[in-house]
Amino acid sequence: MNLQFYTERAIEIGAPPEIVFRFFTDPIRFAAWWGAGSEIDCRPGGKVRIRYPDGTLASGEVVDVDEPDRIVFTYGYEGEGKPIAPGASRVTVTLSEVERGTRVHLRHDVPTPDVRDAHVAGWRYQMALFANVVSAEAQAKAAERIDAFFAAWSQGDPGRRRALLESAASPDVSFRDRHSCVGGIGELDEHMAAVQRFMPGVSLSREGGIRQCQGTAICDWTARGADGAARGSGTNVFDLGPDGKITRAVGVANRT
Image (tube, rainbow, N blue to C red; front, side, top):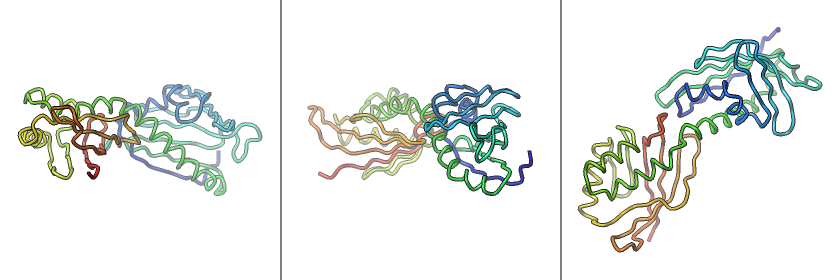
């Protein structure tokens, strides 16, 4: 192949490389970000076949695998083979661990500048799909951790409150709302204890499901008094780390 031109793109995903790489080795996960019917045999010489949702077919084969750091495969379109024939270009994906998870760098080597330009928008879109499906798996326990975070606010036993916090949040978690500006799990724990002293009997609970996108989750909440009556409501935004735990939370109360 005479591949003189290329396009490249790099993104960060809030998941460790081991989880990210599964979406190249597992055919079911591979199809989750390409389209139903797509498949990969992740070994040198293994076949790659992509079936886009609109029915377009592309194919190639795996050239090199260094799990979980790198995969190289050829790529091109079936049928008339336009704009490139099956196997007539090369895709190299490199993974590197970073503080917030994994940096994914993709380079697509192609024969002509027209082919390069034709794939810029497509890779931007495809990498977004990739980030979303990987994040959804890495953050599968987001609702469980958010519920533990809310439960900690009304847990009077110091040991149980700390256990809830540690199950839900990272050691350097930060929290902001109208009455809070704290950093670190220890300070947040102390802040929760103070809230219980000044607002005895008040509890927080999630209302409805959570909405997630690439390591950020949003949910509504209600604060209730000891009598069960609503005392306030609002929305929280949570940032989730590569281990799935809360790294940052911001609470916005509804106006009353």
